[in-house]
Length: 85
Image 1 (cartoon, one colour):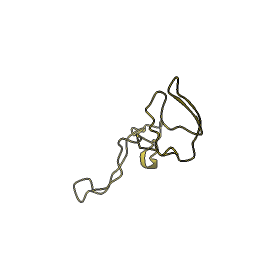
Image 2: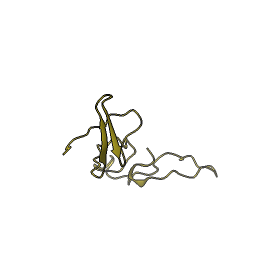
Image 3: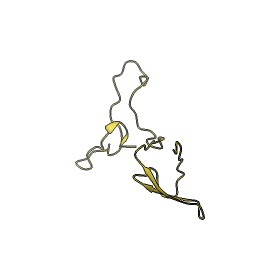
Image 4: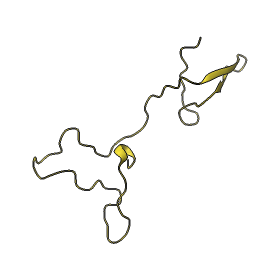
């Protein structure tokens, strides 16, 4: 993914052939990719904790919580609520 490690895309015109490719990844010695090298790969799906959200109301008839604040994740994704006082 281009966004990982702050990578940017290459030039689109003037004969460039590395629009989304990483380019050079190091020297010719050693003849391998050095361990820990920043490379393209999966970015995202981290577990996020939001501590500033407040539960405004609990509707027990429909098993619904009304939350004030940011709720992480995409639409219809699973949200875990813990530490309710």
